[in-house]
Image (cartoon, rainbow, N blue to C red; front, side, top):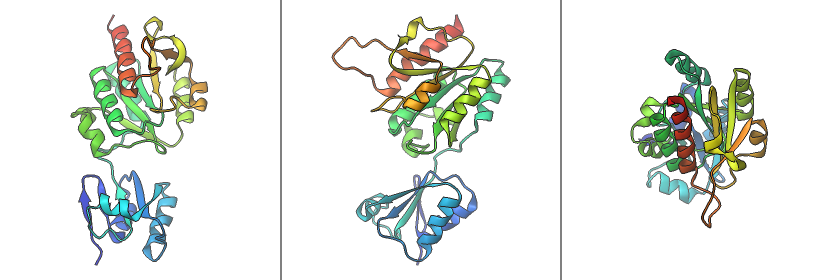
Length: 249
């Protein structure tokens, strides 16, 4: 018998996952136990490729643990805790408010708690929306929703295939792109007037080379101690509040 179970963000079982994929509902990724390639698994893989959904091959023991011992039949799917918006939705909100766009771009943020904290601070700072990539990035899972402490309900988050292309499009709309990274100008000496998109990089490697090259300005926070970097959400929060401050002045 095929089982279906939705526990937080997880849908379990071959038929359940297959129907989920066919339904058109947003799917973060599909987890397939290593070595599973028989029967309907091939149909699931084909649907994922057709819809450009990320497939992750995982150890069966890990899948057992995630599914808490239930009969997953070698497959499970992660669904988001909240619906995604589009970049157009974000820009429309700024226009509706009569404000220059204020956007956060997360370049491969992988930690759920970091993304949740960024969303929470962004909502407090008047950010119009957040943009994340589809690959190599945490999505809107339930840990993100919990860490945001309710802010996710009020924040538009767009998930895009190509960040570099989106940045080029934003620049064509007179939005300046600022990378939060090392070796840039001081964040508190930077003019953030007008349309702003702030790029926050990966927790370990920072803003990717290609994305950084697309940015107009790099801004940095001085490191006065022995460590040479801050937690991604902390750094994002400091710079977001500087942008918000300048908008209030």
